[in-house]
Image 1 (cartoon, rainbow, N blue to C red):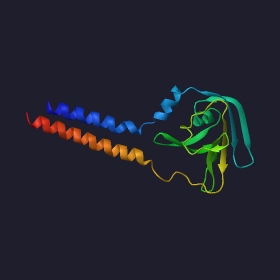
Image 2 (image 1 turned 30 degrees about the vertical axis):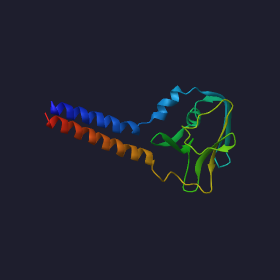
Image 3 (image 1 turned 90 degrees about the horizontal axis):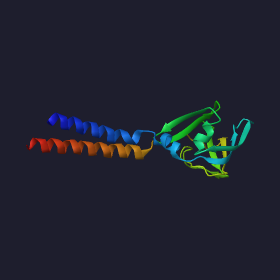
Image 4 (image 1 turned 135 degrees about the vertical axis):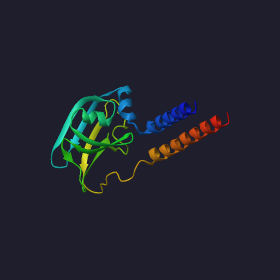
Length: 163
């Protein structure tokens, strides 16, 4: 009986701990209605500029990958773009995007588009730095959930020993 409770506690703890490390934004994007009439301009920083009009997508990331091959890195639930159509970032250049002329300071998969938005991807030159800091919310959440799981297991052990 004790083994069953301990194994059940371990499984529950592992499920709780693993939950924040998934990629919910990739799943959630399917439930967000797509905005329409979107314009997408990509300035590759090498003299090549492309533009497409009357597109539809729920967010900037899905808009971009619907037309271009994208090399990305996921950090928790946020995506960081390394390359668009084979044009890579490097130590002096990086991909940044603007929506309706305003610099977007959140991950492309988290920026929800509205009808008629205009998105500009630009391979920028000066002042670019790649992601250097980990997402501390995931680390703190994982540690807190781990302690909660350990406390749960200790409580189960303590209660079963008293019988």
